Amino acid sequence: MNFYIVIPAHNEEDHIGLCLESLVQQTQLPKQIIVVNDNSTDNTATLIKHYTDKYAWITSLTINSSEAHIPGRKVIHAFYKGLELLDDDYDIICKYDADIIFPKNYIASVAQLFKADKTVGIAGGLPYILNNDTWIYETVASKSHVRGPIKSYRKACFKAIGGLKNSIGWDTADVLLAQFNGWNIQTDRTLHVKHLKPTGKTYSKNTKYLQGEGLYKMRFGLILAFISASKSAFNKKSLAYLKNTTIGYLKAKFSDTTPMVTEEEGKFIRRLRWKNILKKIF
Image 1 (cartoon, rainbow, N blue to C red):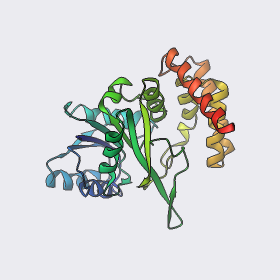
Image 2: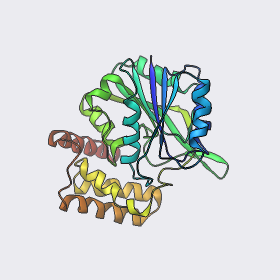
Image 3: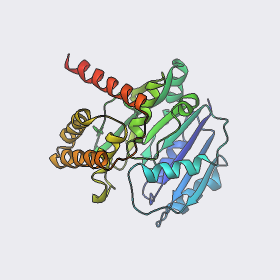
Image 4: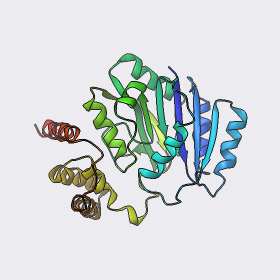
């Protein structure tokens, strides 16, 4: 299977070398890697060049977007700039973050997930973060969810969902839309990647309402949005997160923010979320 990988990178001098080194050491190599250097002001470009000079199948692109780390928008903008450089001769398209260290069998294992079941549209492993010298599972999502930093899509699924939404919540919307279009999601729970920067570490205070905006744009409805925010707040041990997410949802609702999914897709999403909630209760 031909794997194409796009890696957005903004000021990743501490991580990009480790990420790329783990990818060039894969037992199954990707066909192409595009590293998008997004307005970096540190040594990121030099480290990328070390790999582009050495490996013909690794290419870099420099773009100049905002320095602000706006969840969803900045990374997806960079992803699409990289995607523009790729042809259509891929089986699997991947959006990987620059702060990931992949085990040597990662691509081969993900390829096997796709090969074993033709209905699998999105696949991946599980991210682990360092906590007191121990790598622990990053509990911001269930182990059945393929996380944003390590997304791999079958071409037909990627096209069916209309690619990635340029918005906060894109890495939940893609999974829900894949299921709407009849695709399954698969994780290999034995396949652990090292996530060097915990989720949200680089977010600014100005983004605190965006999670609620994302839930509104996915047409969750207020009750489901509150349940989802409560679960995340519990995991984060933060009542402020629950308050800010609820405020963000209401701000989006009363400002007539445009949803990122259709009404039909929204109905499917709500039914699916309620089904999963009821399954856990009963």
